[in-house]
Image (cartoon, helix red, strand yellow):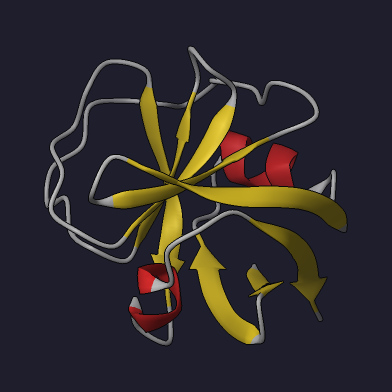
Length: 116
């Protein structure tokens, strides 16, 4: 499953894993949301509803470019810097085009859509 995200003249694609949380996320697309900075290593997006946590588990190999769902808050996290797994974090997929768009600081309207 591939998605396109667009904000502030940036557009990037991501490949999502075939998992229950990723499929649940895709079922809600397209979405018009807001993307904003959180800390120094990620941008976040609050979803309109919580996703299933079925099939989630501890993971390793955390890296910039990961897209995760943080179940306790119901938000997506687009990581552009180093991070560590924490309880409630579910990796959904990876950016295909690199992290450069995520380095644009600020709060912007964001469109997320499924690519066919």
